[in-house]
Length: 115
Length: 112
Image: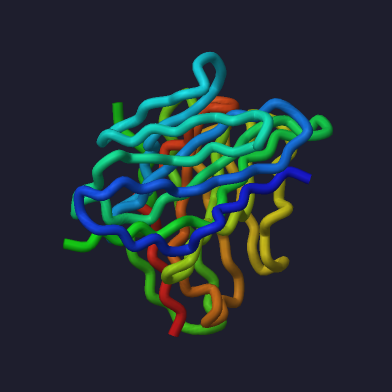
């Protein structure tokens, strides 16, 4: 079965510190990978995506993620966070399993940036 | 160039009443999804439409929930005999196949 695991439900970090939000997936087929962000009281929007090509993907607001096929991971990183990065971050995986297309979200990681 | 729209933005109803939530996807997007997000929780998949294929209803929590998509465009999510546990934000998203999902602002449902 295809699944997405976000190991950390909450991540507190001080402003200007680096952060890594972890995402692991399980799938026996090729997948596409996404990170979405939901700022407080706002809708979800795409942060970045991996479809093919370079395994290092850059997104908006200085975030990047690296697709690691051998470890089935797609961790999100930012070298220096701002207060405005406080939000909920969702990892998602899509692909075709047994003839059925699936798009699965992780449970989310709440990033809290502290002054 | 409009994004995904949902109506109403807020809905307050009494327990036992039926409600209809509407989603207008981005024109040309063949895929449409419904999710539910309870306070402080992640996204709960409800149903997925893709073109003229039979919808994937595997996420609907009970037979009180149903959805349809007319003409491959507008979708309506119907909840019959609402219960207090149905209170949540209902999100709609559309996409091209395999692509990023574009989310609407959501409908906040409160069942009293």
